[in-house]
Image (cartoon, rainbow, N blue to C red; front, side, top):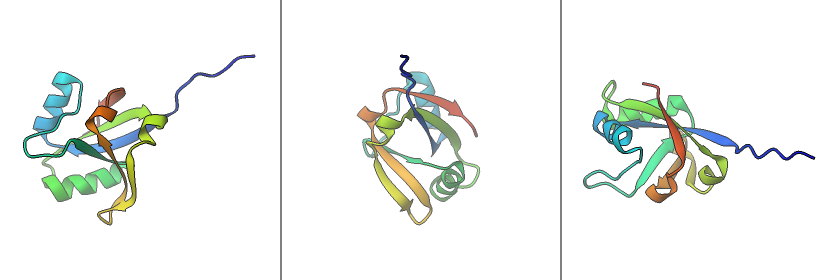
Length: 106
């Protein structure tokens, strides 16, 4: 009998400033910026992350990352079906964001 130990992954998307991206690439971790919460918000769909990026940072003024994280961890994040009237999103505390892979997509 063989058991498949493959961990199911979830893709999530985050629009961020160039400064936040540089910090993430330098340290390999998400961090709280000045005057910010100890959480990070992620869209479940790329197109929704673009809408949040346009709204919060201005069209063309942000970078986009895709993270792959275990579904078990992602399921522990706070979830909304339609955050800000845009789409499904999740909110993670920084300590929940320890084991993920990141890909820059924009």
